[in-house]
Length: 99
Image (tube, rainbow, N blue to C red; front, top):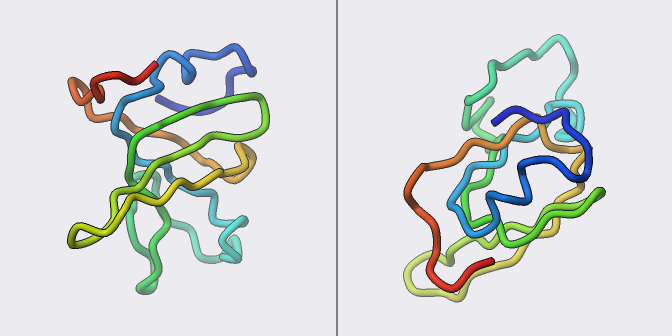
């Protein structure tokens, strides 16, 4: 799913699904002379995306729950929508009990 709709967009309907949030390079401090294609997960050894479960969306923010490593508790990230290039979803991975 590509970005670009308004606050009432279809992204809200994806709450509870596992996804990958791909960040805009300019928000990560990458100059425009360092282009990377959508779907790239790493540039120069730095992550440019984050995988987890979409927990909430509003007009300014999205909330992503990222599983902890090696049994550690999950971390909830609140991400400004302006920082997001796109969000991709793994179909069929809805989390039981989510909205």
